Length: 219
Image 1: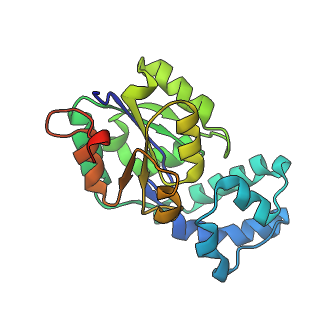
Image 2: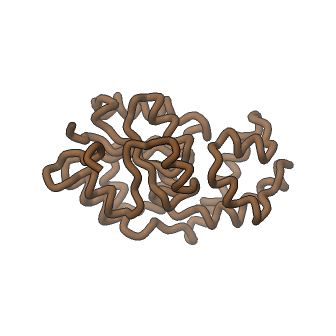
Image 3: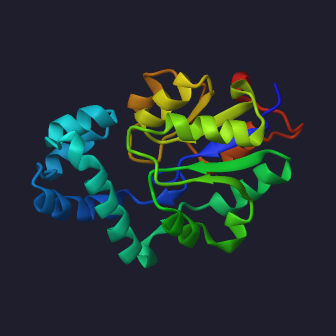
């Protein structure tokens, strides 16, 4: 089946934000009075899905929009320290060059996404859905599918978190898990995503192979 639309997460998938997150999250925890993340907990939490992390940190759900907004504001302040993962530029250009429409669906702000991706990459993105609730990506995925005029099975959602996988699966979209982001690769593999990407180049190789057809079910 031809892959007509590639929907990317941003943080941990295209942008290398994990170290920044760890550096600021405890300041936010102190401000909003939820549990700090201790160094020995980091790898364990990287195996959890979002709801379990929220419970572990004892963040009331009513505080989540406030916490998310605070994180976006702090990233805007520190935006000069945020970079794309190596190979993102080439991967996006190659996938788009094969006629696959590109989209970004993220909890981050449009301003932060635009500044980190830069003008050349943003010009390749046809659909940009930002500011999604931490547990609210499904409506944004559905909106992108409608805007692109693409059936779920003709798209792929590419992300680094279990919540991304669950949202894509609920909408019938094949999911490609990247192993370099927030969630550990073994935790993502345990949920049997349609594809697992260990290198940035593999996204272009599988999503936009030499014949312009998806290689998701050939791996």
